[in-house]
Length: 422
Image 1 (tube, rainbow, N blue to C red):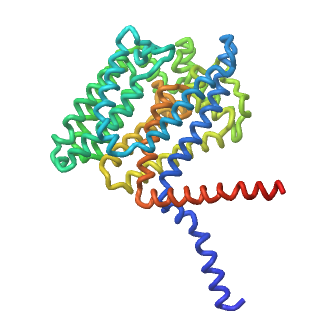
Image 2 (image 1 turned 90 degrees about the vertical axis):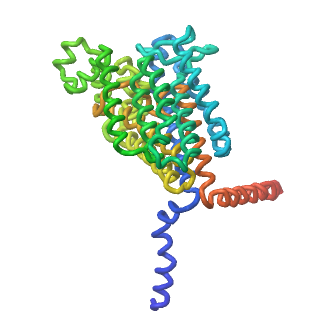
Image 3 (image 1 turned 135 degrees about the vertical axis):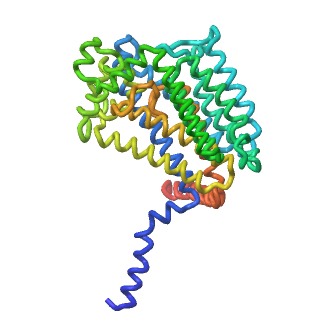
């Protein structure tokens, strides 16, 4: 082989070596990462909800597809909402921010009306038209959009701490107070985290976060010490849920979940016992289709299945973080950062509880666990962020080019069918 030929081979092979980094720099990378990870996690969730809920449904003399069809219905609502949200302009989100916050607050107040429903000691649901709605999920989304709109509008004044904090902190305190009155500690932790993220992106002084952490820790302590259930969960988590503590407590619910969740993960091994083959979902693991669905994934799909789920959340997080870095619009930065903290923060708390690294606080796994309000609002929030990704530099042109390619391909199909018919 001559020198010129060798150089030509190296020059043609080099782009293949660097193909992946080049694709990651493409205008539509964020769009495809967020969209793909969202759809994949939602599909995995549908399959695992069917698998983990079927036994309980049969035991309650219901169809094994009861929970699955319910989750499928909510997904069928969430997907169109996600599509619509991805087409809503940034200006429209800014205009509707106050309306969203007012609606969210009104729904949260209804929790304490005759429409309110208590579940496991938490007054955080309302019953409407035969369905239960969790207004705190609406509050998460509304608070993110409203905070981003207010802070983006006050951008020239954000060098003054008072303009960073007012009116975001009072409004967030009102939402948080209503959720805390309903005794929902898990949702309160997520709300505090996303508000902290919003203020950090807006440029709040770091010393204020030290004060906020102290106030937050005090609130959590009051919530924990005021509930025997939470005290038990924290106590068993700190003690490692040993046999002695479990036996002396008569298998306290928090300990039972933690132990059976770990046993489910341990029995799954590398590749799992097979889809549908879980033993823990046979009445042994409470909330197998909801808070502890990750344990059923580990048992049925093994370590490989759990790594796939973790990888998808990592891809989703990278896509969201990429949007924050690439955007010059403060509204986009703040709103996307809030959604990132909401989805990944809740996933970390849920998975950490299943792994025994964190106490059980009753938070579902986003996009995967059973729950209509959580699924719809999470898909709506991610749809908004997908819309941001569609407006990144070069993305509209790339989407137009791809759309033109699709139309040209479809135009050829009838000709090909005619030729085959001949």
